[in-house]
Length: 286
Image 1 (cartoon, rainbow, N blue to C red):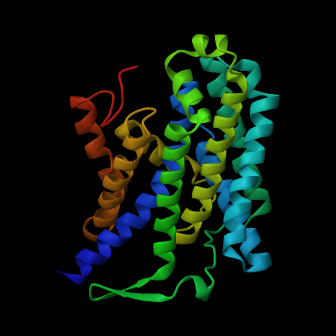
Image 2 (cartoon, one colour):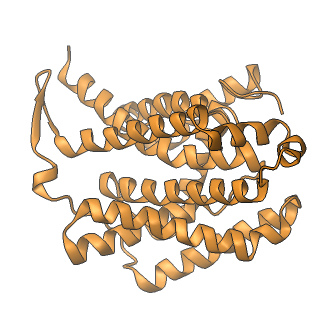
């Protein structure tokens, strides 16, 4: 098998892992709350920058991953409790609040972090060269794939094997009945929003380790996450997995063979799928 082809496949899987972690947080929030969090790209960016600072200070990438995720989860909790919960159910105020939060976060990243693109340093012990099918590939990228797989399995277990997951899935279909059964749907909302923010922060650290963190790139990141969610199907975890894998490969091969069009190529399958299935690959009609 051609070495370049294998390399592009592996690069695509690495990018798929980042796209899944990024998109799964957004699709999880939409699945229950029916809200597209337009500050998700800013969560990614801030989580990445926090991870960058932790790596610079401690040279501990795993600590940076945890710090990036937990910091954004805390921010998401404060935002959801103090402001977002007050306008829940009102589509326009919800949207405007997330846009406002995004603007504030992006402005603060310009104040506290370098304006030039940065990348998280990966300790050598986390990235040994691995020989696979005739090519040498950085071991760290397999760790990134492992993080994506671990998060996917964790989400599946939580949603389909726990009482919390049952409450979340029931809340999607019939919120009033769930509330009548004594389940505090408000707490469920908060937990889902916070976990969605946590995944955004984790994705930022992963993305900043594989690619770069660029000031003001939150809009592009948000667009990518929306493509993952819409292509796979709004609120569908399986759809997020499928769309991430497909889009990751398109981005990898696009960068290799048509770099000037690589970003725009991801919209081609989106347009095709939506023309056939408006609800996305594995989504349900809303």
